[in-house]
Image (cartoon, rainbow, N blue to C red; front, side, top):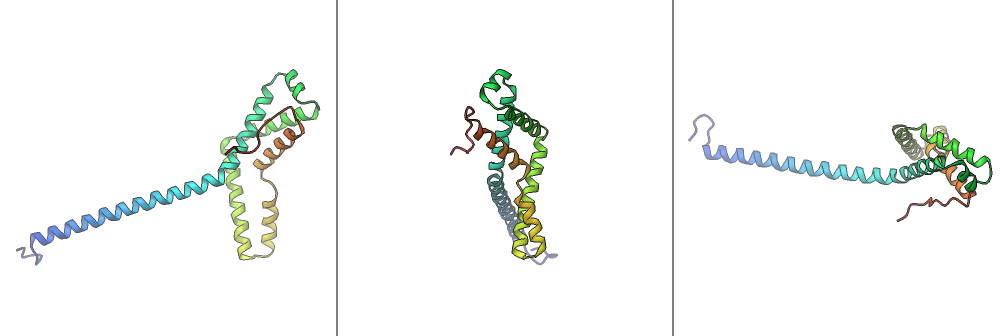
Length: 166
C-alpha cells in the first residue's frame, strides 16, 4: 500500500490507464470530427466552384485555340470581321487574368452573394438594394463566359459544347 497517496499501486495504474484511454478516444473522436468537417467543407466548395471553374477553363481554352489558328482558317470560321476582334479581345482579357486573380474574383462573388443573403434575412432596407444591384451584375468570370457563348451562338461553324456533360 502507498502511504503518500492513500491508494495502492494497482489503483494508480488503473487510473493512469483510464486517463490514457480517455485521451486516446478523445483524440480519435477529434480526428474523425475534423476529417468529417473538412470533407463536408470540400464538398460544398467543390459544388460552388465547379461550374465557374469549368466555364473559365472553357473560355480560356477556346479563345486560345482560335487565336492560334492561321488567319485563313479564322476567316473561314468567322465570316464577319467584328467577330475575330471580339475573340481576340476576349482572349486578351482572359489571359490578362492569372489563375490567382480568377480565384480572387470567384471568392469575391461568393462573399457578395452571402452578404446579399444575410442582408435579405436581416431586411436591412437600403443596404439590401445596393447589395442586390452589385450582385445582380454579372461577375467578371460570368461576363467572359457570356461573351464566348454569344460569339459561338452567332458563329455556326464553331461547335463548342457549352454545357457540362454528365
